[in-house]
Length: 456
Picture 1: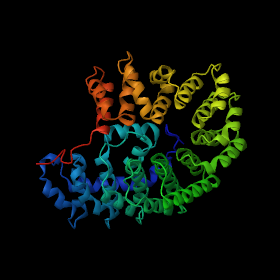
Picture 2: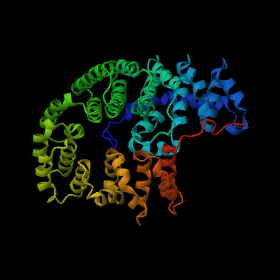
Picture 3: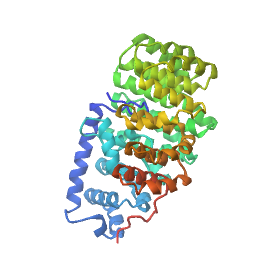
Picture 4: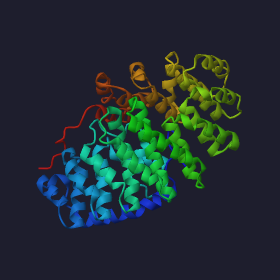
């Protein structure tokens, strides 16, 4: 079992097996539909769109392949009807195509995804999900696409439902944060329907997707009464997942509850930690408690500062920082500042910044220099949000290219239009990784022209 940097449980081997059949079939069909010499730029756009309406499934898939190659956003509404296609191979290919249109960098997403999901056969929607923040371009998915994906979660084919759930999580989160998601309650209802299935793989996909989307609901502010009610319904169902027989589903439930900061789960998660004491489930439950950061967990977190395990102490420090409680912070700092673990010191720098004290930003940002701290550094800075962006400019000229690249990557997620000047400089950096990270971030902040990639 692998865990993404933001604490969300990812899919194990069985998810890859579930997806593999659809991927293989789609690739075969695409190969039949598109002869080797054909390229996106060689085919008239009108002909490609006409192919989407062909009665021949291989022709429809061929057009989807060409549109994916072109990255042509204006075609997205025309693809939307295929999200309900009667042919499951076409339907699955349509899900992956619309996702690819909105990704910053498909190869980069696949590369990052493979670092987390080690098994072969995983699909692009899963890779994009585990990539987490920064996967998508500035353009928001159209209402037609979102409604089509919601419909695809009801497909009779499990692989389509699986990919549609993860694609909704990836494309839906930015819309929820902007308050632009069309009929969010219907979307959550659709994912709850998958959560009620008997197959633990499907339940895990729905759990992860709900955790991501309901976390966005929290970030967006006070939801309306209907959305708040369904948020509680989904949260309580995910709490029920803590008692499932399948260990991977239990871990996914812990990750989702932490990501959505579901306060009603705190005591159950504390009880799980106290029961297991060590091992993956103990660590996952503690991580969830730390991410929720509820004041009621402060006594529990303070006790964990005395653990012999540096990772336990690290999570306790993070959690206390998220509570924002001044007295708890003071007690924590007495112990943490004497702690010799680099993990704990790094977490302390984050906890201070989380409460408005940016005096240790240098220690925090320089975590990009170390492979053991880089992922936490990225997650910490993303969580700090726009406040971190204001502090990052001075690190853009750091001598270490790993720091410059990390800063460039984060700026596209926490920055705004004023960050583009700095990104423009970093795009010309002599280090290729830095320049590529800055280029990706520019795409996260600057909407792509709808006609970009138009085929003649």
